[in-house]
Structure formats: structure tokens, C-alpha cells
Image (cartoon, rainbow, N blue to C red; front, side, top):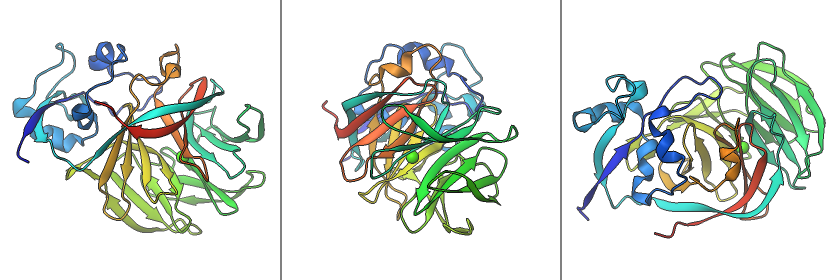
Length: 316
Ligand SMILES: [Ca+2]
């Protein structure tokens, strides 16, 4: 199939300060309109790709510097026949969520209890919670750490920090610290496929780590229709063998084949979750497969609600 269609790019920013906003798209996104599936690729591509399409780019309402890779908007053409499934969340149930939680990582265990990791300096913690919102085993991180993703691996729980190069290994039963390890670069999201840990660092590359030593044992570059991605954030290693990743500052979740790095599906959540639009709420962040089901729990930073969803084909 040789047809091409026009794809509009949205600006991206790298400032990860809480509540940072992408002003160029705010008016369009606030309409809650669900974009056509063909436009889903637009916010998922790496700045390196965006830089290559500047010849066809146009500025957004005069805001930002379109020559700077952090604030690019524009347009390009991409193949229409990408083998990428377009999916939407179908809400099955909703649960109250702690709106003070700057959610960075979520896991659901076999008993449908939650482990949650949160961020911000001076506010970061990890805790266990029921779906009714009862919290136990809460541990605050020392002031100098900005908490990031968490994952269950066997009888342990790993917790990342953003820019400290420190990961905490914890006992699953009470979430107390066993040891800390150091790593290079930033920590964003983490999940366990049962044999290894998979970690994101804000780029489009996922790093595989040994679940005991935390040493890097491999990596894969995540691509969508052959193009690099970026800002992969909270992760979930699903029972279907895929890795699901929030893409920071977007409404999108990527379904990734960990062997090839290929994106096999894009879930567009734009407009689906009222909690996203509550004053003070920040971006979508938090995805956890619910064991033994076809459902996922989704939430966000300082959202007041978590959503139990299925991913269903988008109706166009
Ligand atoms: Ca997760």
C-alpha cells in the first residue's frame, strides 16, 4: 500500500518539573476530542525524527522556538499501512485514588492489592493500598530522592529514583529496604517479566537488568513503524508478553514487543478519563496489568481516580 497521509506533530518539552504544560496543544487537547487513529503517531516519535521533518514544519501559534528540538511542532508524512493496532480504553470500573500521590509506578498483585510509588522531592514514598484506598506499609524516601517507577519481582520490590542513580530493593511483605544499588542515567519506569527487570530512562530505549544485581544485561530500541520513539515512562510487563509504556506528556500508551522493540499497538486515552481534567491533576502515569484478567489499572499524577479498563480496537 503506497498511500501516505499527513501527520501533524505536537510540541514536546523535556522539562520534567511537576505540572509543566505543553502550551501549544492545550486548547486542542482541552476539547477532549479523540483524534483520528492516523494521528496517533504524532506525539510518539523521537526529537531526532522531528528534526528531520522541520523542512515541512510549521510553528504553533507563534509559541516556542521551532528550531529547538524541545519545542518542535510540524507536519510530515508517514506510511498509512503501519502494522500497528489502534486501541482505546473501555472503562470497566473506577476507584478512588489518593489525589496527593504524584503517581510514578503502580503494580497490582494476585489479590488485587496495589503497590504504588510516588515522586516529588520531600514527598516521595512507596505504599501498599487496597482498591478501597486503605494504605499500609508506607515508607517515605529521604528528601534527596525523587521516587520513580516500582515493580514486584518475586518476593522483592524494586523502586527507582529519577536523577539520583539509586534504586531501592525492598521486601515485598512490608516494603522495607533490603539494599540500594547505583545505575547510570535517569530512572523513569520499571517492570519485571519474571526473569529480568526492564527499565525506561526517558529515552526510547528500554534497558534489561539482572533482577538481583541490577546490572545491565541488554537493551532494545523501541520503534514505531521503524521510527525511534522517546519519553517512554511508566511500564507494565503484561501476561501477554508485551511491555506497555506510558509516553510522558501524552495520552498514549504503547504496546511493545520486547524482543524486537517494535510497537505493535497504540492505546489512545485522550478524553477518556475525567480525572485528567481535575484542577491540579497532571499527566497519565501508572499502568498495571491485573493478574489473571484482560484488564489494566490506569491512573495519573495527582489524579483522584484509577480506572480499570480493557483495551479494545478503536472504532473509526
Ligand atoms: Ca507499572
